[in-house]
Length: 464
Image (cartoon, rainbow, N blue to C red; front, side, top):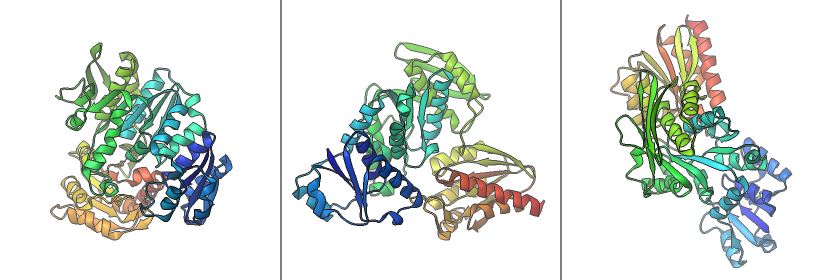
């Protein structure tokens, strides 16, 4: 069929690519010319053109709509946009997100484990992948480690036949991607948690954000959810997981650096323990991964062996080594529910915290984050550069520090992470711990990590 995709943004691009891959004639149009898109998006659009998608950028196509019989409209296109009226007048059939999801579902054709939720998706995705690889499976893993826009990464994987080269797919499915994949059938779906986040995208409504995350509950044969979500999920066959004394189907507890798992799922029950190198929030994510592996049918020994060997993922409680006799860690915690467990992990240590601008494309409560940091840190160095959007906002750094007004911590605002790294040496002592937190560890992992370490090395040479 002849399809026009209105809008070359984050929704339109993957929709156009999968429609083209499915054998349709596709044109994607946007008022913005190619040069006005970010460089990485320009590269994707040009790749799409090589694949066969026709680019019509820099002007509208009002007069040419009669050449198409189907249209996909990006959700960001205004309701009263003229092109929407023209599509209606031309009696074109609208392609919905559910139609795109059905194409993705038909294309993949192997068992899928999908992970949704506010926090813990990436870690849970990689722990599950590690367990299945250790058990001998060929695994297509897709997470935010591979790119910020997961719908685009998943479609790219389909085009490159990753689903045909592997036995199982383990896919992180954030809230934006859920909208595009709501009709994809999952063997197992996991909901890690739901916390206030991304609310600016939902008109400030927690109910609307929750409804989006709960789309995962309708997709799988087997649905696994954190017991903390028990009052949110309307499904009577949920496999619950939790830590400590929670009454869950799969319970986990960390005792003397060993993860103790007890489970009662369907016709399987038992308990086992495994050494766990990773602590902090990895504990709960490891329980979720164990629950998925048990439900899929993997044996205890495979799960135990894999958990004992898992050493974490980059940007998530990542240990970077010792510099001038200070231990340095790099973490992506950036909302209260993730920040507190990270900081508690370092309780009792003399802690110097470097925090990049907590805002990404989503504004966040910087005052509250500063308040939390002030309870744990002896030095707080806040940077104003928004690593996701690429702009400097020193007011954001000052707001973080204002939140720690009651704290005795030394508070410093700087422009960038390299300066923060350098000053972390100046205002610390041998034996202290230096910790990075903030969304830059995900959205700009390489540049933020490189900048911080470059600054730390300069500081070691300057202040030793």
